Length: 161
Image (cartoon, rainbow, N blue to C red; front, top):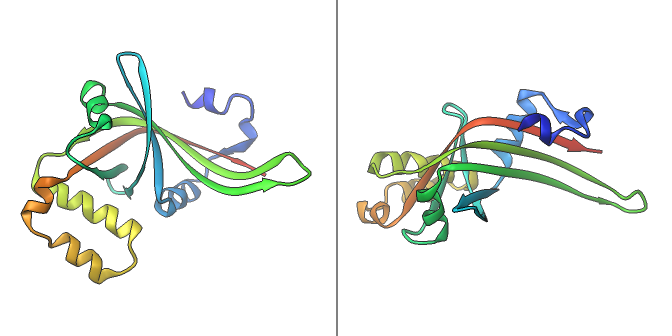
């Protein structure tokens, strides 16, 4: 897949691992592409990235279309985009994007859910008091939510201008 993504513009490939990590750790949302019975579905979700396991965590309600798709097919392709904006009078665009593939699973273990929420909150929230309050919420909160873990198998980056 990687060669196809960069087929027309190999000069735009992001190869620096630190630049890729910077995009992963500073992004706030990813768009996931799912498929069930040859029907596509995309959804954009906020996330947390765990460098130590090369995994993304997402949270959602206990019911919904994305869960039906994930239960049917755990293969996912997703993207993160850093949009620098359109360049007037040049027909150009400043951007950096990552495309990644992997398997996504629905976590059932309470401690895994807490660990996933820890990753998400530490990526999205700056207030440590709020993070602690949420992480130490009652067990019933974690029982009501779904936490997803996407284990990355391949990632590639591309930039423009």
